[in-house]
Image (cartoon, rainbow, N blue to C red):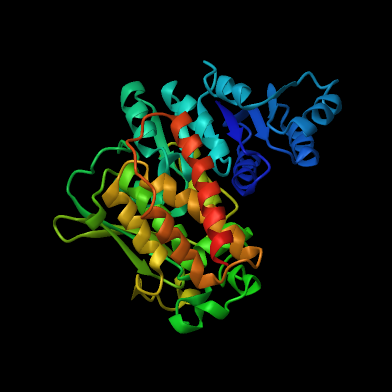
Length: 390
């Protein structure tokens, strides 16, 4: 039985993970759960799974959760230091990193430094801190298994013995697929009229507003290119992106002999998560089986980087290196929020991201503290630029 720390238990990654655990109570025991401020849900999960620890990062919710679990024997802790401590516990076998945003970077780095097996769904820890995380993994021999469907698909094609962070032997290049979002066929000159309601209406999934907008601008795919660069030690030019509206093929690996391996499946996060939790052994989940006759056809088109400039900006960030990806990621957080708040137009997201990326001095990545300070700086600079311009 594997002892699991589930970080971000009340989010979508947490939902899919707990669904797999319910199906295999003989294989997995939750050692610790974490949440930010969804107190009702974390209390319910704690009562269901009876972990040793619950960690709450929002101070206002901490006491409420502590009081609710007072008679349960579950220890309740507060703050990011508690997260960092629990992921390093000797009895922990798997750490599932499902915390969203920069808030998840510290615990990811702590788990890697401790040499844990990390199932990684926190995008920012690789986009912004890829150098730190991958360097630490090499030193500690931590095993990283990516959970994003695209990167997990590559991992599956390479085989469970592949060590993330090393350039795969006998691989020529890789291809990430993108759904294209709701606007991939819309003329560029109509982008300025796109409303927030239209941008969050993804044709395939019901996602949060931020990631839906990132999918619509193809920034989400750009961030995944940056992740692939670090996770698989792939050069920028060896990472292709194609638009695949059916979202059935999640990624492809092209080998030097001309062979191509692809991972197919219905879009369901239980598939990559169960593969990660099984450490390469396939275990059952509740995802629907793929019916190719029902799908009918699989189509592919080139990603238009002129129309979807954010994808090109992500590639620029890889080329520049250093803190460029962190700068781009932070700027994008602010510009998307401004768009959703009606302060800027959809087409201005990429424009403001471009201006910030190409006006800020880029540094060598040295520490997590440095990256968090850069995040604060870029958020301020981006918000100021938007205020001055609009």
